[in-house]
Length: 83
Image (cartoon, rainbow, N blue to C red; front, side, top):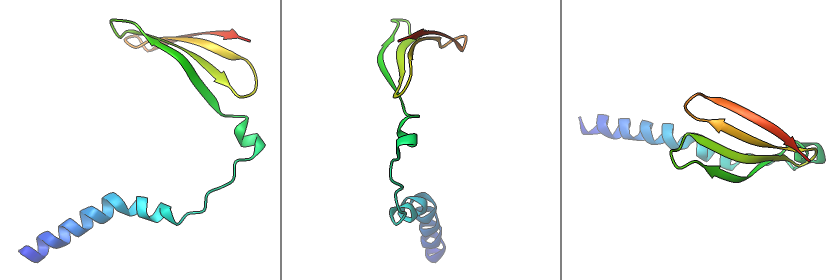
């Protein structure tokens, strides 16, 4: 019975940490200019006191940004482009 429990523990540990350990040896790809240009940032976020409304500025690296207002209850979103 003790050997079975130890085996189960080992399987669980490998299942949980196996992917993380496997990715340690993976080579990282360099960041190229075309990859960098598709990045976006979110800044100036604000949440209403009741937690229903969220507003933030969505800014791409290249191009115009947008002010985004979201209603969390209705899952609706409004965007206004800004330079």
